Image 1 (cartoon, rainbow, N blue to C red):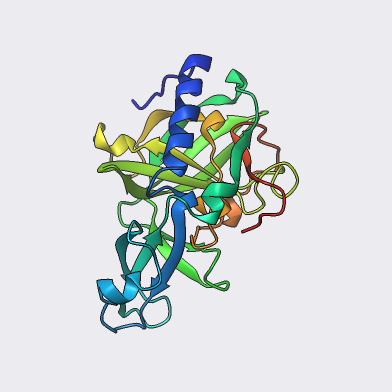
Image 2: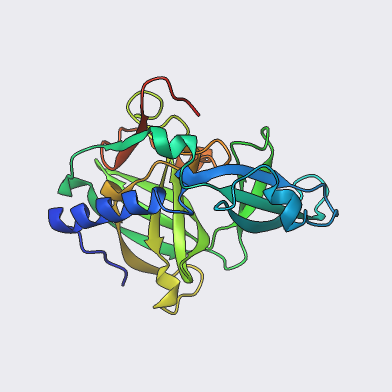
Length: 247
């Protein structure tokens, strides 16, 4: 059973850790460049990638399959903890903690090999297939909702990443939707397709996607089945930068 501890005190610690993460050396605010080589081409060497950046810039490597050809594609990122976004960052605006948004739910395993197409913000309307082993199912105001959460890894741990939209997007919260991460219950429960295990959805931990902090991020967008028809007034709302700064 995957249950998170959710109290105002726990939430305050999570908020502090979240700010530390986004402002860190490899936090989203530090990202100043993402570059991809042509499909099938070799990776750019370190010296060329670092050209024009100060010595304290961090370089990390990426790889993926090209969305059009399927060929391997090599990329890199440049990170600066004194980036313009870091200097202009003021806060992450958020709703007050509300225990009413800590909801019981279940993770229902559907098929260990299922993939679902997700559109990404920088892919011009094309979609990438992401592994979705099951659904997050919960009730709200008398109706049942079934959302796709894809599999990801964070700090070496398997997690579920929920990319969702709701009625606040574009007015009260980040326009492209928000994220919510959960520990992957399949790590502690032996599930077969059709089986389910209880989980907790704490929407107080909904986050602005990395693309709200850096225009060099390529975030997945909520698929239609993950767009809730009601307002989720919990979690992070938007990133606040100093007047005059924009991504």
